Length: 164
Image 1 (tube, rainbow, N blue to C red):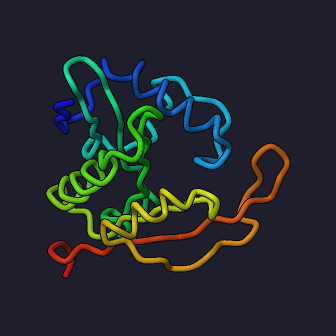
Image 2: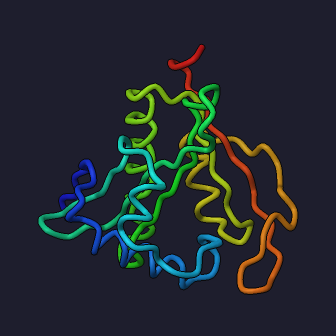
């Protein structure tokens, strides 16, 4: 397949939604248990740094950033979401996409990216570490998913070119 990495278009939402839904079903990708409607998802993510991988008309993965705070002092800090379609995992697509997301975020003035990942999601933790994220710590019993307390591993990546 000839995957390209492109800015996410509003018209990509059905494919993005389906990849997100399948990730949710694993139980180890997010605290969310239902895919939001487009308007809610759109409002919760930064307008820049929304990427998809595309082969012809197929979307194989997506990544986007959410602001961590509305306070101006944190304007360059965002949380990463990245989801790879089940059929495309283990092919290096996630690494290419996350690397592109880092570059796109820096082009838009972001100095810190963070990710909160369930410890059971070892593949996602390894992906982030391969792209330069470091473990900050474990947030124990930080939230519940379907009545079960869950920990998250907090990772961050500091830009070497923005905010130094």
